[in-house]
Length: 412
Image 1 (cartoon, rainbow, N blue to C red):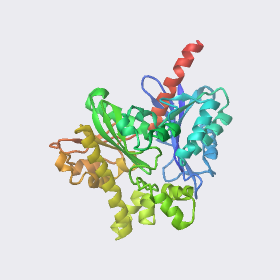
Image 2: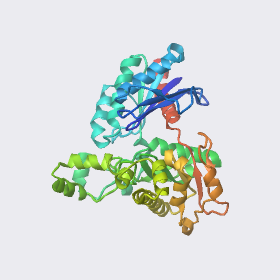
Image 3: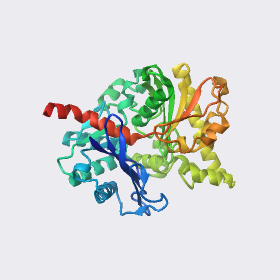
Image 4: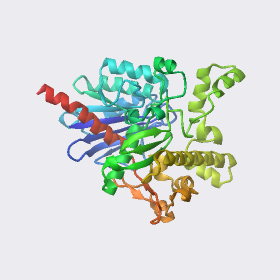
């Protein structure tokens, strides 16, 4: 089965056409960046190799995710991926599945309505996903089934002590308020790859997994299952992120609303889009740019990075306590995979629990190939540390194929 996986971020759309068999094989893929911003571009590759130098990206018209997915499907068509060589199905990453979805779901109008309703809880992501799904259905036609793969599904195993908020039970039940957690596909990828690298059954591993990118989250994993995670009811809770504040005192929202003369929704927008690394630094949400600015003496950039690393280190310590120790701390995501200095800062001073990095290994672990992984801890470290690239798109394709195979069997 050939599955096109679509991964909508707030301003990006990653995609990959995967031949899902005994060993999944990428046929084509790429990313549309800066959607809705200045100079959106498309990087397209076939057979895992870019068709042009990454710096020579194709300019595209992508004012929104609907236009972006249409351009992706056009590009696949022009490259010959049509008909029997085109996608048999399309899998879409959806950030918030609420209580409705504990696993992948075949997309129909009922599923679309549920995803749309949950958009208020993931305003940067569910809306773009809905737009991409509708455009893909219109372009690909009814003959191509589509599946939603939910970020929240992996965290449905959290025990009540971690999933509940200490608010009145009747309110929680009436409004389905709980900690859902996100980045589930990414955390699941890290867990499975770690087990493969170390030759251990997934059910035997205890890990702290760190998905660090524009959005950031940590997860405590015991027996291969999520038992706690830093994001909560929405993706705003938890760590400092690119433009998201992470956890703040809830009283801050009504306080700012009164002081600034705006409503709560406006303040929530500030916390989602104007805060985090961007808000503290005043200049950028990009760690690469902030590291350069810090080196040039920018005190605000330095503080933003310090707050980011401190928050991650504090979360690692909390989850080591919750798990009563761990086999390893695993770094994934754009920052986790490509910023050795950030990894070093996060792990600095963690010798109290036995976690010690090897500086050389850490510095060399940049651009680690997907499906590989690299140990960056010292030989004498009591807790290992790994960099494991996250391949959400292949995982989405595999989940899509598994979701559809029962239908194929029933039809036959």
